[in-house]
Image (cartoon, rainbow, N blue to C red):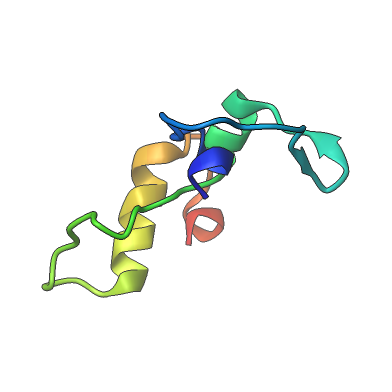
Length: 70
């Protein structure tokens, strides 16, 4: 997951990465995906769904309608 997210900072990465048969473009992949490391701290006062919706509000452009965000 670190390699896919572009967060791999050590070691050696070999080979190519394809998503649905297309070469991975980091800028596009970062815009359409989210990744939380296991050591990330999430608020115990909100649900997983609420956490993901909050993340969507932060990541997606204002042109994306509410239903699509959800």
